Length: 208
Image 1 (spheres, rainbow, N blue to C red):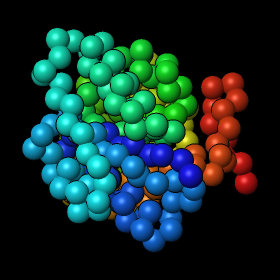
Image 2 (tube, rainbow, N blue to C red):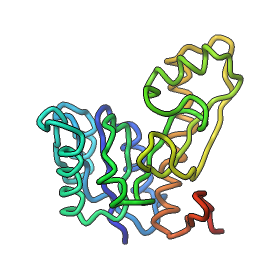
Image 3 (cartoon, one colour):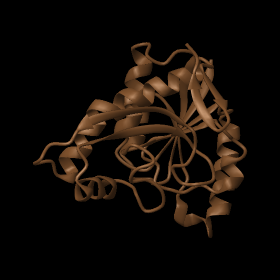
């Protein structure tokens, strides 16, 4: 059974999707053992508490730079014996001292079809604003491994939705969360915990 540690910064809707999936058997060979938040007021902490998951608050502003924060996070992950780290609305960029320690063991979900509308500066509603401004006809979400570059790690899963003429950044965000993010993230976590993801030449392959 793999230990899953989830990093959060906000409301925790993707965390809730993971909790719900675990409860109904949707995550095989894995258990969420800790939730670490970058903010003490994140509602995700309440979600964790309601699910009897231990929590830690590691506030970014208490550290002078990204390296010292990432080192502190690394210590917390080691204390938790983390086998898999999941970024679920975690809004802090982690230094490579951490990402290299957990190579292909950190999963993130990005609310667009990478390589579109991704990288530094593309987060939250900004992603959907950019997609609508460009006039895309489909958008979606991508589950990928995290490396030292923003949104550049191997892609695990992707899913798409149609973009309506009257979509706003808010309605598109909700559509992608409900139809893609909340389904694909638990699926990718389960695939990892089942040892069904293989990395070859920088690409992720799902073993059937």
